[in-house]
Structure formats: C-alpha cells, structure tokens
Image (cartoon, rainbow, N blue to C red; front, side, top):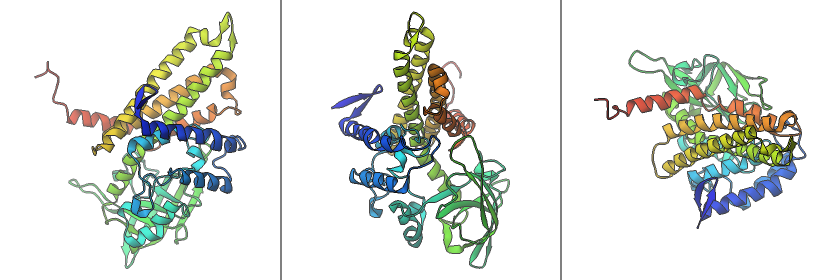
Length: 398
C-alpha cells in the first residue's frame, strides 16, 4: 500500500512511521511546548527524559548509530520523514520534538579508537554526554580546508592548539568537542593538512565566549591559548581531519533540509487555516487572488524541495554518493522555507509578527539555516562545479 505524502508516494511502513511521529508531536510534545517561553531553547530535563523514554519505547532513538553500539539504524528516507515531522513545533529549528529523538552520533563512533569510542562516543549515544564540533573561524568558514588558521604543534606526548573558533553551536556546557586545526601548511601542489582533536573544556588553555545573534540560541567563540591536548585525543589520522569533517557535513545536510521544509509546511498550513476564517471585503481573505497566489507559490516550492530531499535520500539508500545532492537539498530547502514562512507572516498580517505565534521565531531561525551547514553561495559553487565537470555540451554545440 502507498500513501500520498504532499505529492510523494510513500511505502506503507513509512506512512505508519509518519503518522506515529505526528501523534507523538500532537499528544506529547505540543502540551509541553505550550508551557515554555516563546524563545526557550529546551524543556525541563525531566520532561526531556520522559520524551526520550517514550521515543526509546517506539524505537525512534539512535537512528544513525551502528547496532553494535546500541543503535537502531533506519534508512535515509526514514530519517528525512522523521526530521520533517519532528520539526513541526516552535523549537523545531533547534530542538525537533524537544530533543526526544536525540541527535546524530559523533564521528568518534566511526573514526575513533576503541578507547575513544568507549570514553566519548558511547556516552554521547546513551545521552549522558554532549559534544560540539568546531570548524569555522573568524577568517571564514566557507572554505574550511584553506581558511583554518588554528594551529596544532606536537610537543612530546601533547598537541598544543592556538587559535579561535567562531559561531560554534552548543559549545558551552558540552562535555567535549571535536576541534579542527592545521598541522601542516599547504604548498602550491597540496592543500594544508587538517587534523581533528577531541578536546575537553577542562583542558588547560580553552575559553568560551557567548555571541548574541538573531536566533534564540547563542553560539560561542572558542579561544585556544596554548590549549594542551593529549596525543591519544587525535581523532583519526594526523593530517586527515578534513575527511572527518566532510563526512559529518554531508551526512547532516539532507535531514537538515527536511527539517526546514517541515517548519515551512506547518507555517503554510497555519496560514491556510487563518485566511479561510478571516473576513475581508466581499468575502474571506482566502478569496483574494493575492493570497491564493502566495499559497500556490508556497505549495509548489515546498513540493519541489521535498522531492529533492526524498530523491537525495533514496540515492543514499541505494549506495550512491550524496555530496552534490545534499548541497542541492540544503540550498533549495532552506531558501524555500524562508520564503514560505515570510509569505505566511504576510498572510497573517499583524498577528504574524506577534510572539504568541511561532512564525516570527521560525523566520529568525530559518534565516540562520541559510548559513549553517554551509552558506547558500558555497552550495551553489559545489553544484555549478559538478555540472561543469560532468557536462560536455548540448547537441547544438560541437
């Protein structure tokens, strides 16, 4: 049996999964969220623990964790269904389903030593530890391999890190982080060598400074002043850290786009309900052509964005490389979501600006999404380079 999901035919098992998430959001998440301040970044620990226990009972946690570490891996297509539906809440851009389903496991699970996996990876999977990833720097984050200026110098059994990281989400209060630093300069023939380090906040020489931004959640600057990191905390091989970063980024971008689409779909559905009951001259607001065109444009763009996400996830499930497809999803999904929420606010009028509605928060959060996980311009560059590399010319061009 198939079910139509916004124009896409889903197999029966994913229809059941989607409906299960929708019930969970309506019956469990929404009542808790309704009690939270507008710009809350999380719920009470006891509420989150209860939601996590319920999600665990439904088999909806640790969805990207290998089975040997207690995971319950599902397909990429299932993950985007979960990401889309769980984002349909006020905190959906930061804490989908209030964190009930957890996040992706750290790269330590795949690239760490047995000791690193036991000490850092497994506790993250179990939810007893939190981690951050620090790539971006003040010199720029769009070309991290060449722009990373943070240095790591080997001194005996210790690596000494010096530099600054910027815009790092969830850094303060985390139990550790994976920080990327330059261990060898580049040449005319080879790029710089980047190494990944597992760094704890208690290591000497590390400082966290909050950065106030447009969204409710503040990122942090991390200052590394001769920060001392044990040699055994190198993640993967020395000089091969950029591969660790790439794997993490590509894997995250497809569900990242799906979450943005989920928020935008919720905003559009809210706006449709509003205009159908809002009186206007000679009828209802929904009768006006201007409103209908905003609705039509939003629906078409969301369907296109969703198809791109589902297609990319299906390719990943088939074992194909998802790098360019992930860039396509991230670019179109985040930009579409921003436009749709903007239109929804316009349809609501003054009420769309009010903090008793989630729209203005989504508007701010989605603006950040066009920069996080790589800005739109970088993804355009990735897509264009791939197209130019793989196209010889049209039939009218010899």
